[in-house]
Length: 209
Image 1: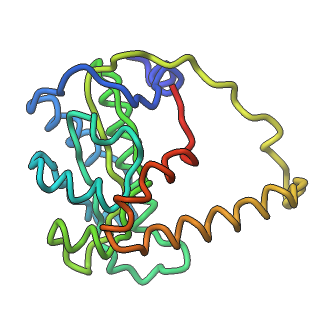
Image 2: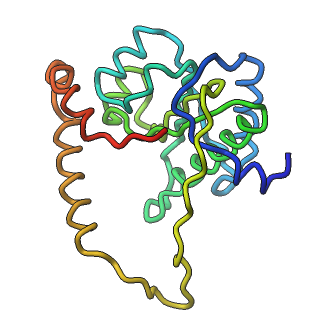
């Protein structure tokens, strides 16, 4: 598959009909490990989450609406022992890896979606026994697509030269601050409260095909 075609044809898939075979999962992860990483550290790790009780605990702490229906879960974590805290190069390395994995999944005929609507990192660490030296980056869910969404139009006017010369909309900034406050507050609630509030919270969650 031509790499440019793969980039343009890949979609975030949220509805699946079957699992990805283990041998393909391993190939998808291997593709991730060929991504560039800061100082060639290659400090990514992958936690394949299959245990239903573990999945349930993560879901109850707060995730995207479709995660419980996804057949394959891979949590990508990365060693956070970096001296480049200004640019968080461990996160950049991990996201390059994730992009490779998503393109590989598409090339093998499977769909994926990168999830960042997850429980607070300290809770994920506790559930999955992740040491503090590793940072949870994203949960990648995979499977055979049930439907293929149509491409959404790309935004325009995103290039400028030499200096920042874009107009920022103040209303969008205000909405961002409000949403950030409510998200942070909700994520810190005890699990038993989140379970009760979940139906209400779902009404404010953005949905896609």
